[in-house]
Amino acid sequence: MTDVRLRFAPSPTGYLHIGGLRTALYNYLYAKQNGGDFLLRIEDTDRTRFVEGAIENLLEALQWAGLHVDEGVKMTDGRIVQAGAHAPYIQSERVSMRIYDDIADKLLEEGHAYPCFCTKERLDTLRAQQKADGKVPRYDGLCRGISPEDAKARIEAGEEYVLRMKLPAKTHIVFDDLIRGHMDIATEDMDDQVLIKSDGFPTYHLAVVVDDHAMGITHVVRGEEWLPSTPKHVLLYDMLGWEKPVFVHLPTVLNKDHKKLSKRNDDVAVEDFRAQGYLPEGLINYLALVGWSPEDNQEIFTMDELIEAFDFTRVSSSGGIFDRDKLNWVNAQHIKQKSDEELAALLQPYLKEAGRIDDETDPAWLMLLAATFKENLHTLQDIVEESAMVFADTVDTVEPEAEEYLQSEQAPVLAKAMHEAIGSVEDFAEEAKTLMKRVQKETGIKGKPLFMTMRSLLTGSVHGPDLNQLLLLLGPDKLQRRLQAYL
Image (cartoon, rainbow, N blue to C red; front, side):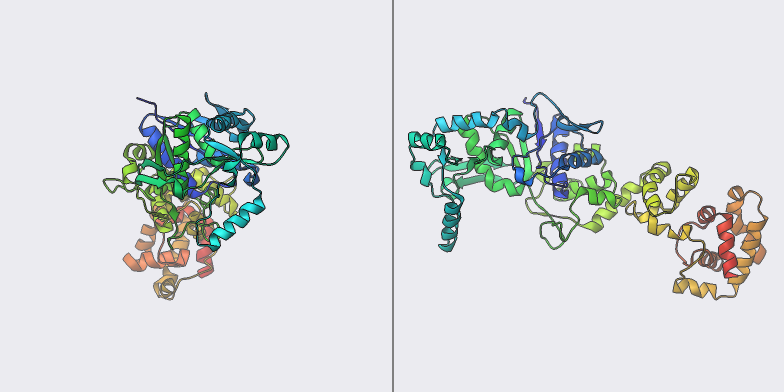
């Protein structure tokens, strides 16, 4: 059996899009499920769109997400390296090796391609006229009629040209897609695709076929925007006599308005979600479900469970809706699964950035904070707002329901009793859990009047974390300041 080999092949045009991460994830899951390899190739033949630092950002995002590259472009000790038998894995570096030129020459010699000398002005005029006539814009084949001798002479004279694929007349290109099913496209509905641009760089269409073949890719899994181009790729495989891979075209990730996610209106970069405090486990778990439905309706997965359960036959052909509320719920479940120690470490950067803690903060206190608010967190960033009550010296805001308790007869009685009880303890950490019982015994107030009033006194709210944990978090000095301010 042929080894299963899948690749993620993004262009270095900036951040890693959330849809790109899902494409990488589906490639990774299928490769791992079948004991195969997950490759990373950088497709940078369009030099006008290259963004400095984009490869580093891409590698960091994949590493953070837990998608570890078996072969191709990797990050090692902060450096970009290329590991594997098919290097280089950066397309621009392959150009200088004449890998694409040799294939282009073969297509030209065998009559599957031809030089085109049409200027940009002529092509723009042609397309404009075709649109005005209600036709689909496509190249009219003018340069097909140039003899090889004339073409060679014009090239040697320095005339600018591109190399185009010569589509066969009245031919049907057929292939099967694991999600879309059987596809049948007539060449009359296609265009003589440019294979080599005037700057000598291959277009995506030639480079992707050459590289996928050279690297032994068995399954091409990519976004549905490449589906219209696939017949051209299938034809190139046939022209070159190469075995075709299995094609899988994934549905687009859409926002709640059923429109494609856009940077203008939506968070689309993986780094945005990372900064907002989403766990890699939570984001990956949720992204797997955007377009794929597991057989048993399970919703919370580890990576290993996703690898075992994933199946392309259960990926929808229609766009997957990116639902932020559902993402928050999934992420919250993964936060709950963290130990208090793990969660405390993850929360530290957000609390430090907000100026709430520093390097001297007691680790045990941080673990208590994590344990106290764990159930309330949808993202790590939520800790800043959820725990705000712990860091204030006084109760500055009082909710209307809490105000009723503060106006009650028992409020000053309880405030005084707690104030005195705190002042009488010798070891606060040990005796904090007994304070509520002492106050109850001293005042005779119990149940809802006791707990609701005390919570209102200490936080200005009737809702919140366990009171005993809250007492420990606030500590004796802060508790006394709050009670004294009320009294």
